[in-house]
Every structure is written in structure tokens, then in C-alpha cells.
Amino acid sequence: MKNTLRRVLVVMILGVAVYGAFAIYSGLGKMGYALSHFAWWTFAAACALAFGNYVLRFLKWEFYLARLNIRGVAKVDSFLTFLSGFVLTVTPGKVGEVFKSVVLEETHGVPVSRTAPIVVAERVTDLIGIIVLIVVGSLGFSGGLVWAGVGAAAVGLLLVIVASRSLSMRIIGFVRQLPGPFRKVGPRLEEAYESLALLVKPTNLIVPTLLSIVAWSLECLALWIILRGFGESTSVPLSMFFYATSTLAGALVPVPGGLGITEGALQQQLMNLGGVAETTSAAAMILVRFATLWFAVLVGFVALSLLKRRNPGLLAGTPDLKAVSAKTA
Image (cartoon, rainbow, N blue to C red; front, side):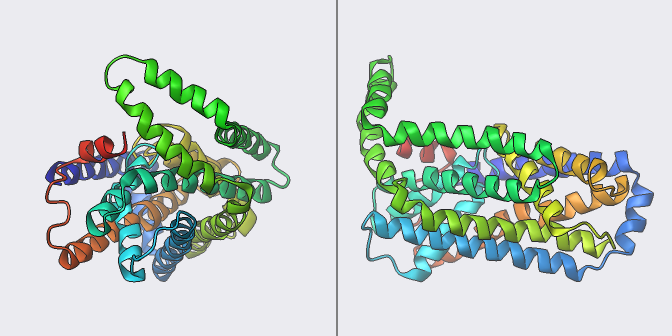
């Protein structure tokens, strides 16, 4: 666990460096002036909206647990387990959120292979939800439809592969023929596929996708309300477009938390499409990232601390992220 904490701290330091570079480039004096006139209650409201996002996504987690017939997990434990996954939200593609599957195994004996596919299903429905928000926000912006098309194609390809058992088994069979550790991964992939195929059935996509749309719209509103705190009149649909497209850009590039990619895309859109001044756009970008990305990491650590109090032996044998990968491989 110490090595996991060290990794998170390294990414946090990298984040500070990235934001510092944005601040210096935009002008520290001008940014200080912008922040001195900022309505800080809007930052608190943005954090509250982000937490609302987490609550709605927790409902998806509960939905998937029920579909996999996983019972006996108290709602409090389930909520804290879900939130604990945010500890590793700064891992590439958020794959570290499978950490909550490890926690559930240690606290309730549920095999990681049964719940790890939930993370993939969550990403699929989140991606669909974000694409819907891009389409809604891109009315009048043809460039937004390009982003939507790329994301929709990726989601469609994934759903086709998962929906076709023969195609999926061929891919898994190919993996089993590879040398080294890949040969041992095959049987676990087959077990994971059965859960994933159930989770992404059309009947199991509707409710989670609707929850994703509402959940991520709350974080879009977080950007909007922070801009209002700077006195900007950017519309809700435009804020939705900016936040959703930058989030998608960060998710597609395998860097921790989309760091640098999401920030750059968001600021450029605020400046070039929203007409927001460079200094204000940089300050708004940094604040919304603290209210969403880094606030999530903080919430994750608090949840994990509470879980360890309820389960003193939790993660005693899970020293770092490699252990998470080993359990899900």
C-alpha cells in the first residue's frame, strides 16, 4: 500500500507542476487578480456537484452487483468500497478503479474475477453518457460531432466484440496461445467474459447509461458554475461540450488521469470557442480539475481510511498496484 500511495503522490506532484506551468504561462499576477475576484462559494458548489456524480455512479455499482447476484454487502460497506476506487483514479484509463474489486474480495470474499468486469461496464456506460452530452452540447459545433463519431465507433466496436461470444472466445483463445504468462490468463478471461457479457446486455445498459448521463452532466455543471464564479456567462450547453470533450480526450490518451491532455483541451476550448480570457480560462480549468479529479482522490482516501477502521486487516497483504493487476490478470 505504501508503494501505491507513493505512486499517487508522484502523480499529484506532476499535477502541481502541470498547473504551475499553466499558471506561469498565463501570468501569475493576472491569475492572482482573477482569483481575488472569484466567488469561492461556486467552488464549493462544484465539489458538491462532483460528489453527486459519485453518488449516481455508486447506484450503477449497486445495479451491477445485483445483476451479478452478489448479495450480503451492506450499503455502507458497498458505498465506501465504491468510493475507495477513487484512490487510484489517476491511473491511466482509470484502470486502478478495479482496486475496489480487490477491497470487496478482502472484506466480503467476492472473487475479483466476478466484479472486475464491472469496471469495464462502467467505462462503457460512462463513455456512452459522455458522448450523449457531447452531442447535446455540440449543437451548432460540427467539430463536436466528430468527437462523438469517434467515441461512438469505439463503443460500438467493443459492444460488438462482447456481444459475439464466438468472436470473444477467439480473441481469448489467441491470448491463451501466446507464450509466458498469457497462457495462464486465458481461463480467467473466460470467467471474466461471462460477467461482462451479462453486464452489457441491452437490458442492462439502459439504466446505467441514464445514470451516467445525469452523473456526468453534474460535473459539466461544475465547470459552468465555476465560470459563473469568475463572472463569465458561458451557457450550460457550451460548458457541457467543453467539459465532455476534454474528458473524452483525457480518457483516450493513456496518461494518469488524463493529466495535461484534459487540461490543455479544456483551456483551449474555453479560449477559442467560449471567448474566455486566457488568464480566466486557466484559473477556471485548474479549479474545476481540483473540484473533480483531485477531490475524487481525496474522497477515495477518506473512504479507504473508514473501511480500514471497519476492517483492520484490509490490504495488509496488498503492497502496491502490482497486486491489483495480479488479481485481475
